[in-house]
Amino acid sequence: MIEYLTGRLVAANPGKAVIEVGGVGISLDMPPAETDLPALIGQEVTIFTRLLVKEEQMYLYGFRTAEERKLFNLVIGVSGFGPRLALSLLGLFTVPQLYVAVLEENIAQLKRAHGVGQKAAQRLVLELKEKLPQAITSEDLAGQPPGSGGSSVFDDLTEALISLGYSGGEAAAAVSKVVEQNEKASREELLKLALKSMAQS
Image (cartoon, rainbow, N blue to C red; front, side, top):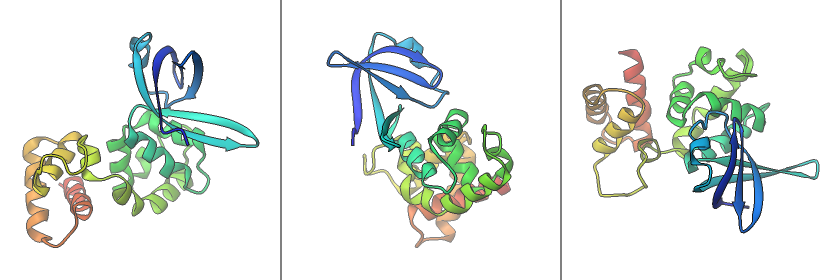
């Protein structure tokens, strides 16, 4: 499997990019929301990749972050969801936004993605609600490398909520409450509880 590509970005259009690596131009399908890519043409970039083989043809998909690729891999594992629908979701939502929409079972929000109807959105929630917190940690959502700096669970979860758009005060209050009431819960369980608390407030 090709883990990532580092090379000169030579072309970027919605949903497509071409990177020159060792004199070879490699075409990638990407989420259409990568609107900052055209500004990077001519510069060296690193793109995380996923190679899929279908009917003897190879398709290479590219992502700006490893977390985006994780989410893509999870979505294409859901019954009825292929690469096109996965890219559609990632084109509309950031990783934290899609994470929250699934955990909060926000069907109306998920249906905004092109090609995702009521039943597909329900299936997405059903199959990913338990898998997401295990695959994408609070450190991932906060944009921090796992195990960095020795920060506390409270700090990690608060920063994760802030990265989702909540204010520092709201995030700290929600995390403080769930940590106090659920001392033995894991980080992922605490994050889910904090998100649920924020949604209800």
